[in-house]
Length: 128
Image (cartoon, rainbow, N blue to C red; front, side):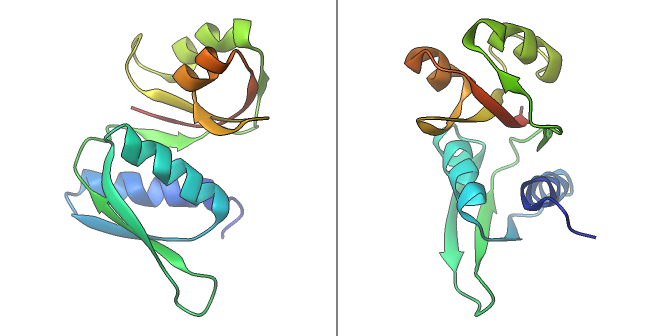
């Protein structure tokens, strides 16, 4: 049963990466596209491309085997800039290892970009 598209997409990517597949296909949405863009920029994915399948589209993702763990954060906690380190310690295995992905007034960004922009937001996902 599908309730959270982002969570389903991250689980599909993680499982495909763990069994050694070179690619994965996930349903498309604007939020999933923004998350995939961040993961590609940070080197967790090789690349991705949108394909229109007549039912809203899908992303074809090229994996590189760098994902050890990832998932959606539920419920979507609102965090302030000063609480960022506490949530990094909670969801990531070590300091400066992995990413927290959050939505902010400036768009979807990772924890380092949010610190640079001096903004908080709502936690969406983690990856390491």
